[in-house]
Image 1 (tube, rainbow, N blue to C red):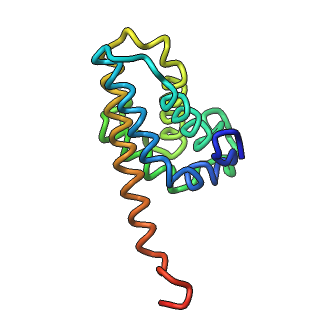
Image 2 (image 1 turned 90 degrees about the horizontal axis):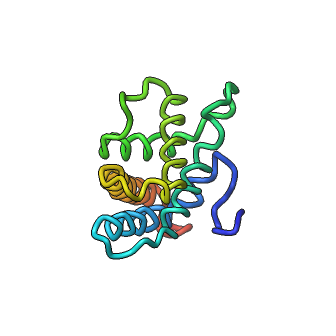
Amino acid sequence: MNATGFATSNAAALRSADSDLPSLACMAAIEFDNMLLGRGHQTDAIGQLAKVISESVGDTAGAGLPGSLPNPTTVAVMSKAMEGANLGDEAPRTVRDLAQQVFKVGKGLADVEAQKQHREWLQTMRSFCVMLSRQASAYQRSSDEFRPPHPYRT
């Protein structure tokens, strides 16, 4: 685990963060909203979200190894969030295409200081963060349904 408490392996990054991902994405959306309204320029949650996103897809953007693909949870959550925010020029046709797009979004979030003056970009990233929060929360609720509430109950 790293300093933020998130696992660093590709397969476990989103799963270890899934309990905090909805609130982290929501806090990042609030920070984008504050920048749009001129209320503040704090980017702590945006930076943490960028790190989680980059770690969740790892270095799949340039890797050609079959074992370097992100886990299905990451693919489902990120795909729905990107689709809902209308991110990307075209719909990804493969998992690797999606991983490359997600990696670019993570890099863009990490470089938020350079993009602060672009209002349209800030609005798009705010929409992405809201959709990511919703999708991660929906995934979290659906995975809780499969867990028995008590070890002695079925």
